[in-house]
Image 1: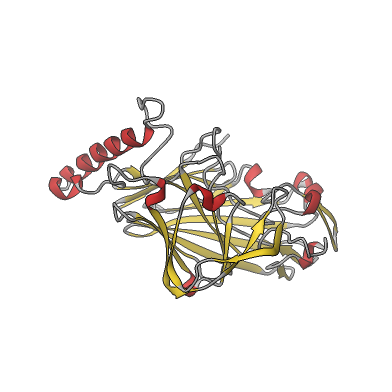
Image 2: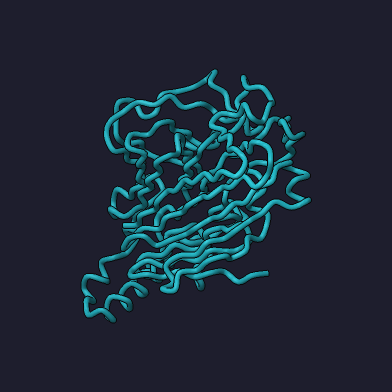
Length: 340
């Protein structure tokens, strides 16, 4: 098994696991923003979604090349991805997954998936999907990201020495110490000590989703079977640029927003002023999700397609947002995560 790859440039650092090419850590000034996984809520952190987003009805669909049989979010997260390129300055890494007899049993297509993680700004990590059709048939696929973030920011279920039930407070203290050390090394101790990712009394309910401008969106409901229905669709937001979050917001799985203004969404701590901004040009959808058992995280998920709807058929090529890639062609999509 390959070791995780570390990236660092300026104030930002990240780590990526070759297993699934999954982001493991994303830190600004030494403070961890990325959810660190906890099986009590959700054990993953930021899986790569390919070649489907969401679920197939009964885990199966028919395609031009034969049956596609996959669990939710596809196959890429279940395989080790080879490291094929690393920047000399440690600011980027590219992974590669190619089809095999095992992947073709689930998804009967030839492909090459390259995932690039690159620090592209003082506080920005970019995640790029390169999908190449290496076969002779048209390649149908969707891609998506699934990075989850601690809410409150800096609250980690795995902070060493944190007493049970007090992980958030311990994380704030740990981030304060880390930030102060980093800042003092640069000769700015007072500024560094103010860069904590949470307000001391900040709670999940103090977080909001902020959009580029006021707008309205109709959201479907995702059922326990993972399929989507428009029968009980609801409007959110309603002529506003802000959506307040509570744990009850996720009683019916993810919130799926379509054609978000400017392709920008921010998860913001209203008390601390800290958060994460995701820019996702080329992704028509973004899912916002947290586990239904009052989990202390929120996932921001740019999607090129979405889960199967109840009124859709079960032809793989007919799934909403499906890219149909000609043999020899490559498709590229990138989203950007900025911490503040």
